[in-house]
Image (cartoon, rainbow, N blue to C red; front, side, top):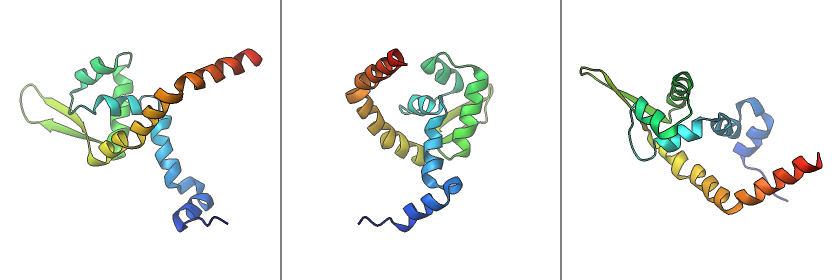
Length: 127
């Protein structure tokens, strides 16, 4: 018999407050992982982020950056100079997410992504 740890048991009992749910929510927003990966090389300004990512509106970038800052994954640093300059960078927590689970997910995708797409195409043809 496998016994759950106290933390795992709390996660089952309190789904709304579950750490796992809070963590997976980070990847549920389409652009969050993309912005995190765009910040992996180092601090960037907004226009540099948009250029690196492409296809993202300024409004969506603003929402994503606010959300990632609020989650403690990205740091916003404003420089007192003219013209004003603001840079965004991964925090230690953000870097641990990018270099840990997101890297593992990327490795899994490279290994199994074709099989995943094949299965989705097959399912679409059956339905």
